Amino acid sequence: GENVEQHPSTLSVQEGDSAVIKCTYSDSASNYFPWYKQELGKRPQLIIDIRSNVGEKKDQRIAVTLNKTAKHFSLHITETQPEDSAVYFCAAYNTGGGNKLTFGTGTQLKVEL
Amino acid sequence: DAGITQSPRHKVTETGTPVTLRCHQTENHRYMYWYRQDPGHGLRLIHYSYGVKDTDKGEVSDGYSVSRSKTEDFLLTLESATSSQTSVYFCAITTIYGYTFGSGTRLTVV
Image 1 (cartoon, rainbow over the protein chains, first blue to last red):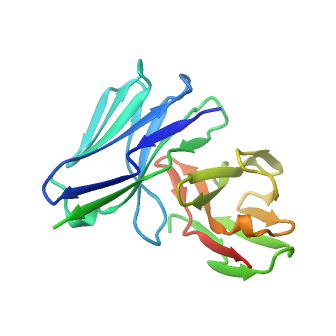
Image 2 (cartoon, rainbow over the protein chains, first blue to last red; image 1 turned 90 degrees about the vertical axis):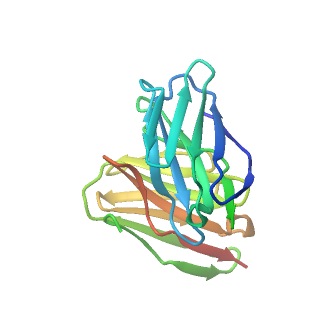
């Protein structure tokens, strides 16, 4: 089955700096890669996603890149703000394999003032 | 809440007792999932369903069973709860926006 590794497990940045979270996946058939943000005590919520036919996608301060050859994808947050502090999860999804998401282990992002 | 609710929100139970968690959706989605969330492990799939009476195991299914007798309800049962099943349980559905999660059930087995 799919295996998703995520790094780092914790990340601390100063407000206004950029943050990068990296993930690798094992199943070359995976074709959809969402990112979720989870605030303390809340449910995970989708913040951005990318499909395997696209190399990069941006949404305001958030961007995701995908390298299919190397089987890795990354989340980039620019101009970080205190409200960006949360746990971020990457995931990989094979639409032809039971429509299941496999998640990384999460990154605790702390944006310090 | 995107049409998905979980009950109960919190539960404390004793080792060896059966426990059932409920996930209810109002939008006729075909796929439903149960995940557990533990520190250092992220979200791990327990079981999922792709239709009424159609279910399959995920990566951490031991000690859990599920049932889906109607489209809107997906039940997760711990036949005999153990302390290792203390966790936060999330139900999810697949929508055009990807996965949408319920608010979660915090289960403590003492």
